[in-house]
Image (cartoon, rainbow, N blue to C red; front, side, top):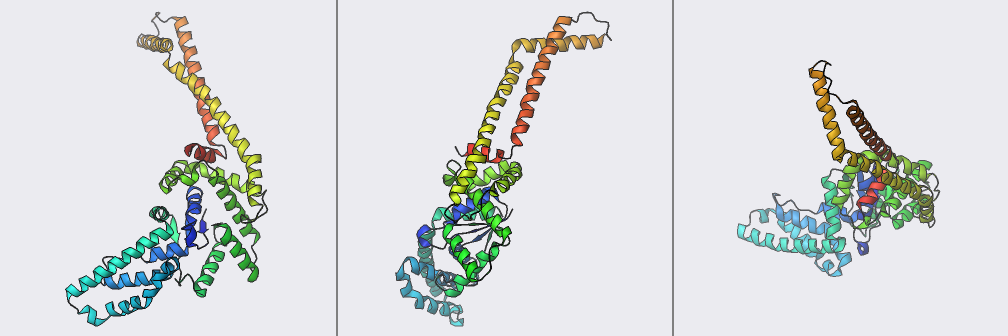
Length: 371
């Protein structure tokens, strides 16, 4: 199940997409992130081994200027200077300049670059950036690239909205409310209505998001914890997805509509909550069988009986059935003990399998993990 994640580009809320990415990381497979702010960050990471390191740094700074200027207007005062610097370090004269001059230039550029990176971390959030980078290292995250990089440019805005809208036709979308509204209006203006399949996918992913963020302390979980939990529970996810698909049929509004949260709450009360309660009761009941199994297994008397029956059986076999030392009562008691032990173990095992086959076992274990 592939997801596309998008958040409204707003420096006031840092990388708001990260909360949605956590949902996709736990519930989805491949994820495409459409984030103008992170795409800028991703594009300006300088290759320190580049042949012309100074030019790489200047190009990165220039790409970041629009974003930095939005956050701090004083950056706009140096725009012309950076373009002049770019022409300088790209020139043949600079290539032939003394190494001492190059090192001093590189030092100044690195200082400016680091200041901008610090400002960017402040704007976007260092933790949020680390979470996205962590998911990238899992090879599950694709960063949507943009031809335009100026956040205030009309061409960029048009490209951004088009990419988000088009992606909804190819994957399950997880969009924040403002972006969802924007895309809906865009579809109305372009007369490209949301198809029934798209609508179904939007509602399904929206319900999954709503259920996930309701998990205890989910918003506090690190990306590492979510990735580890996904690995642990991966084999139970198929049934949970089937359940979400069924539950979503009871919802008719989109996630950014005012009634969506209320609809999700009704689904939770009607379907999810009773199923989770039943699972909890089954788990508690199964503990009885497990405790019985454990108590029988640790009972000294039963161990003694089992030991005696094994010894007697060995004696019987060694004498080809001629031995008469086997105590029938001892044999019966040992057999009874073994029977009860087997029954308890079998019941615990079968009950455990039944519990794990429940469609909401994935959600039950996820909730238990985040408590």
